[in-house]
Length: 90
Image 1: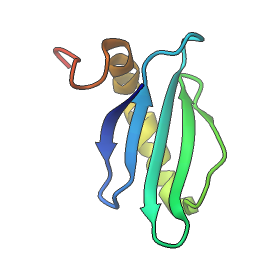
Image 2: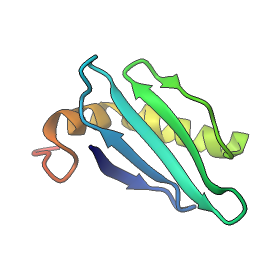
Image 3: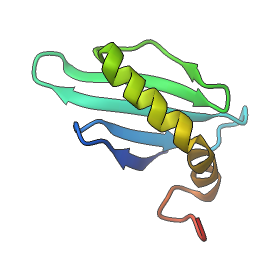
């Protein structure tokens, strides 16, 4: 299951999984694009292992990386608690 986390000003949606069996959390960012359908990228926390980038520019990726890296502690906590809607006392 993927949980909503954040929508960036440019419409990029960032979602995350629950804690996976290997202890990692999958973070996925996507943005609709009229030409390509969607731009997307996956990151696994806590390793910050980034998957292939599809469509995002270098500047967009810098912003996504900054957001994910600066909020990773929250994403990991929310993943353990069943998403931001179920997290308590953040």
